[in-house]
Amino acid sequence: MNELKKEFTIIIVTHNMHQAARVADYTAFFNAEAVGDKGNRLGYLVEIDQTHKIFTNPVDEHTRDYVSGKFG
Image: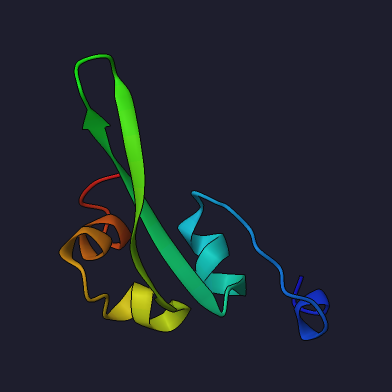
């Protein structure tokens, strides 16, 4: 992947934070909330930034809680 990203833009979707931290230049954190009473969920973008910032100093408290293991 590191060789390919020199020439191509690669988008991966993962729940593996170690993989994201190891290979990504930028990371986006998405979350979802329940909508209504039928179990539907609405997804939304919480934060996007350089990967090292997301994992060391995120701006949003939801991102901070997720990368620290408080939820997820």
